[in-house]
Length: 98
Image (cartoon, rainbow, N blue to C red; front, side):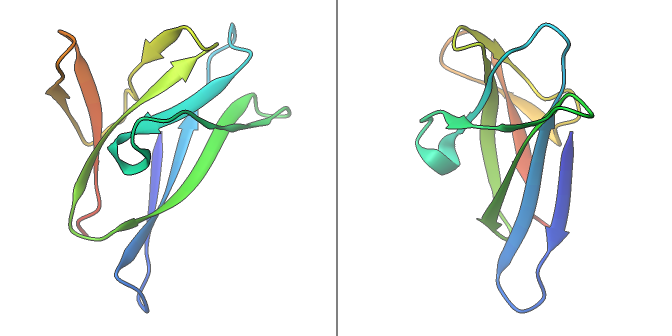
């Protein structure tokens, strides 16, 4: 799930990435906004939702995926859209256009 908040005083959007699945012990957010280096997501134990919040430049789109248990790639099923990647699958894409 993606939650977007567009900042009025800066040319940025605050994007909250959320991922939930019962059989998961760790989730990392990877995308072109962080050179595909895994960023650990924080688990809310009450809701069983992993969460990461980033500020991204407005008016752009970014490819991303979730790395589950350091072994499995997963898309965000509520992404803005999907585009093919070089590995024969698709990336989730988030757009920061208001």
